[in-house]
Amino acid sequence: MKELLLLRQMKKLALIMKIKDVTSFLEQLAPLGLQESYDNAGLLVGHPEKEVGKILITLDVTEQVMQEAVQGGFDLIVAHHPIIFKGLKKLNGKNLVERVVIQAIKEDIALYAIHTNLDNMLHGVNAKLGQKLGLKNLRILQSSSSSLKKVVVFVPSDYAEQVRLAMFASGAGHIGNYDSCSFNVGGEGTFRALNGAHPFVGEKGKLHVENEVRIETIVPDFKLNEVLDAMLKVHPYEEVAYDVYPLDNISELTGAGMIGMLEQEMDAEAFLRMVKERLQVKMLKFNKLIDRPVKKVAYCGGSGAFLIDRAAAAGADVFITADVKYHDYFEHEGSMTIVDAGHYETEQFTKELLYERLTEKFPTFAIQISKINTNPVEVL
Image (cartoon, rainbow, N blue to C red; front, side, top):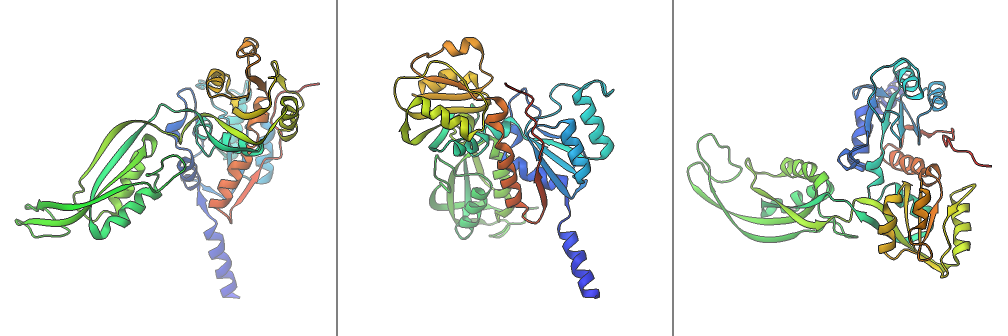
């Protein structure tokens, strides 16, 4: 009996996590540095050290979602859209934002938002939407302006593989559809340890020659600190010699919107009917249909009208997004069909994406997608 109780206690302890464990993973998935300047992603309500037992996933945090969280005993709500978008000067409960924040604090429920940082990832919101639309060969439509860096580090030959793998695991070495990319060349490194040094090899006061490998790899800006930390942790030297070079190359891992190909071309009207069915949209808004089959499709979940010209320049037959303004429909009329499929509708699968990633990382943890449809738009 005592052994059974001990086993249950150990199992219970194994399931205990802190909010920071979840947010750390989410910020590895979609670093906060990738969010747009106007955004407010991250932990909005709650303390990182608080223990969390159940997580609720939603697109928006509404009063109905908060009630669902309270009744279900959830400690953390992970939402796509930040409930706090503008500065809060008062908490009087006079509007939705204030009421939700007050209730979250009162019920001790943490709120976390993962917004444009997840939009701007190669394997983020738009990748999931492209999967639902049945598109292949997906790539970023408009690459982000964040630059790439080249990291060069000199490592003793016997430790080169260990250092390389640590750098790759933390985000280095991605070029297009390839990972673990690096260039390596052997050579001799020299150094002399002075007073106060604790050399890994060699003797104090004597010039030492060591067989080393020069490792070169590419790192996106938002991953640089993470990669350097990982490299320094496994590097055997007391003082590590490394260089960081800025590059003019454009990163293909981050940016806005995506573009892909249908496996088989379709009649334009038939394609829109398929979009309506797969996104469960009650109504599509679009301009003049093109008079050729649809093969190349560009799209952006949420408000992506700023990408209309970019989609046309990329040769898209159709561009799908939401919140398209009246005058936008005149753009590229007849040469590219512009489709407004709805903001909620084009981002709804973000909930599935987050559920998949979180359950993959924390397979024994209680994670649930909200049952509340938070779409505020109704149509007849």
